[in-house]
Length: 455
Image (tube, rainbow, N blue to C red; front, top):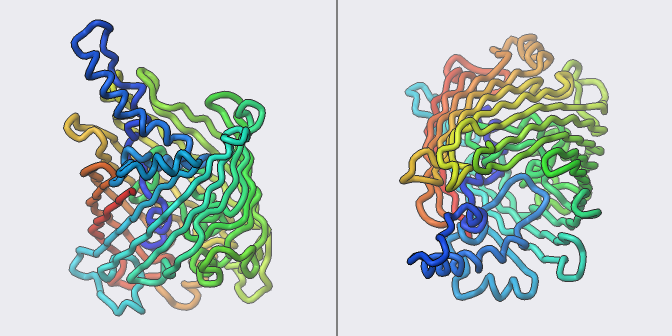
């Protein structure tokens, strides 16, 4: 179960702080004639080379991946500048995670028989490279081509499997003075819908959406997304996406590891609609994101109430999520610093999905300490309610079964240097395995260690 809770986290790198280019408008201005005029000029010269790269960051996603100012290579030897001159931008990162149950009754097993992440010391690495090409140079409004690749490796193969393949291949542009945004190609809608203000916070889970067909970083699928912006804050975004396998991400990746196939067995069309309101942090204005979505899937799923009958279509899911900045710790300097709160509620058809309901509460703080202005502290509590049909089926076979899984996760993520982050945390999980358990696997206390490096 812990693996299922974290599969979206591992494939979704955390966006932990604003880059220098993004925070540039908040720098204090020096009055004309002051002795600091030279210093101000030098600061602007330092930021300007990075600000020019903003046009090359991937567009259309909620995940605000750091810009070149927050990478280990930045613009070393002028490589980014040379590429930018011909319209090319790039970003890459590696995310490495380790989990290990600290309880004495961890009931270690062979890797082949491992039941949840952390039961044995579990290591995973995911690596990404994304290249963009700027089409606005040809008069296409905000036009962009995005090509990305992803590689992943797990010591425990069930959440994998290991792969090297396509991450995204997309075309993006806007219409009518940015009222409409169009993005189409091989997309990973996990980065296009729902989400949180600071990326894949440890402990947060989107598996309730993946099981119902939403594409992921490791399993992109053909899709067309259209977003309508009513104004600068209110929007409606729809997607017509080829669903991932109705048997889940593992089956999808096993059948289509490269990600290039148009479809997989029994996969149909997934329609998603999200209505949202988003307001960025500004002096005296808290960071806010409210969203709600519904989806319908024509894929043919196994019916958990009667697994022997023919597969059936008509799966669906819905979600409501909200994140709000509760307190700004640096109003005039970096208004995004402060304390945040949020929640998510997700639901899916219990006869076609193992997860029937999912509830999450999160409390997190960015830059809580002046000496650590871009560190992130997060406390996440969630409850996963399993399908009553899956539970009844397990009980009918004489197995020990539980109706829900509860997890509480606390993490501290430190920004060690430009492009380098390290995270340490603990996650207590009651019933870490989905639906069934043994007396020895009712509890887990996972030590979580991860590193995230951008280049």
